Figure 1: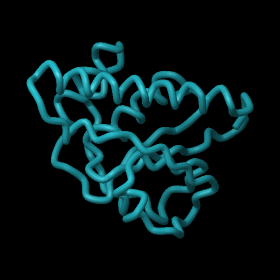
Figure 2 (figure 1 turned 180 degrees about the horizontal axis):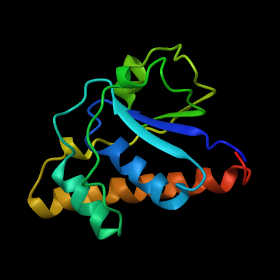
Figure 3 (figure 1 turned 90 degrees about the horizontal axis):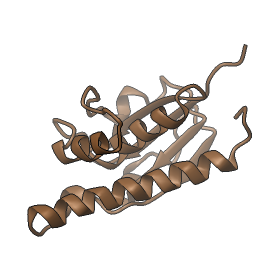
Length: 146
């Protein structure tokens, strides 16, 4: 029996991008990985628009919560640390105990979008779809037993 590798998605606020990535990977390959997300400066809640656009894709992240990276630092052996924003890449310790693979997948921060409701919602969907494409490409590049 093999132990599922841990994947930690990291961004700044842990309210949008990393939460969507966590939900997407858990939905697509939760039988292959233990999936987590955290932020270098976690927000108080998951962004309601992130919850909404994920729900549109059939994925419920409403039970997820923002967590700080210190919750995992030195406590979780991470096979894949996937950083999804530039700010977190700069703030994340270069040496993260237990990390075997550090990946950098920068996405625009949908929480910073401006415009009317339709434009902002479209931006959240765009980022969700970009994350989904990246997760799918990454999964297809891995051996079946990572």
